Amino acid sequence: MKIISGIEVSNKIKEDIASEVEAIKRRGEKIPHLAAVLVGSDGASQTYVNAKVKACELVGFGSSLVRLPEAISEETLLKEIERLNNNDNIDGFIVQLPLPKHIDEQKITEAIAPAKDVDGFHPMSLGKMLLDIPSFLPATPYGIIEMLRYYQIPTEGKHCVVLGRSHIVGSPMSVLMARNTYPGNCTVTITHSKTKNLAAITLQADILIVAIGKPEFVTADMVKDGATVIDVGIHRIEDTTKKSGYRLIGDVKFDEVAPKCAYISPVPGGVGPMTIASLLKNTLLAVQLKK
Ligand code: NAP
Image 1 (cartoon, rainbow, N blue to C red):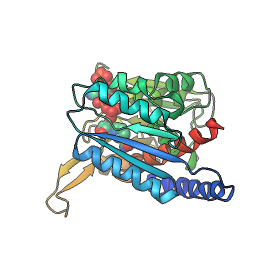
Image 2 (image 1 turned 180 degrees about the vertical axis):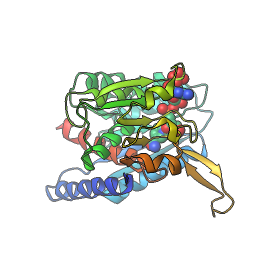
Image 3 (image 1 turned 120 degrees about the horizontal axis):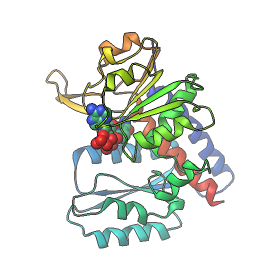
Image 4 (image 1 turned 90 degrees about the vertical axis):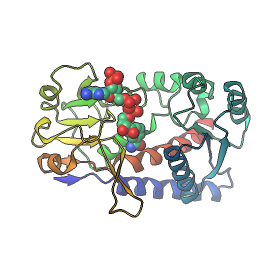
């Protein structure tokens, strides 16, 4: 069994991006700039946004954090997005989700200029992904693709089972694994909460990608010997032995599933760091596509 280290892969990606930024500086060109919009003060969202801003600093990107109050109206938020769309210094930006209940997330996502949609959630980005047109891939599925590539995990002709069909993880993941390229060329089964006999399906998976948001849902009896398992879930559970008072676990019961696997991504240290690395890659792509 080999652990897929998202820390190792994301560090390599960040090193490559930092070298590219150095080359951009040497050419006297504008340094890439990523902005993040944070609405309200949700703890997890703040942690994610801070990590994204810190990653920008690490690779030499410019970054800005736009903090807006929880009670902001949809109209004012849309104006803020328009301001970012029109700001030439900003190459790409993200609006951290989830947004407060009174704001329509889809409307906000669609208001982002497709050329700056580095989260890859705009219908234009998703449509281009379906058509194999170079564009911004949704950050988490993109990160998983890069992990499979880094570890040279064979995918062609394999059966990939994706648990979950969310617009940001499961659905795009299933599309990417079926593409006629590497990593890809899998036969893909996508499952959801209405799927019957789930274990019978997961047991057929050569590659199992789990994004359902249920702590330690996938157990050893659901996994085939020699499978590759990618755990997207992140959950904080109370742990008084930790200084923080909590620890992170995934959607997979790691201790019992890992011994059966050829490869497995842990939580933490698996998919999480890759999501940020993909965001940086997308920001660099935004600069290249602008040219
Ligand atoms: P989501 O929007 O809540 O979607 C969950 C999906 O799982 C839904 O499609 C749901 O089906 C399906 N599902 C629920 N119970 C199921 C079951 N028993 N069997 C099969 N499918 C089932 O979640 P998400 O945004 O995709 O996120 C999933 C997890 O990944 C969460 O823990 C989230 O925190 C984590 N995440 C991590 C990262 C990262 O950077 N590491 C990024 C994004 C998300 P229905 O459609 O039928 O409801």
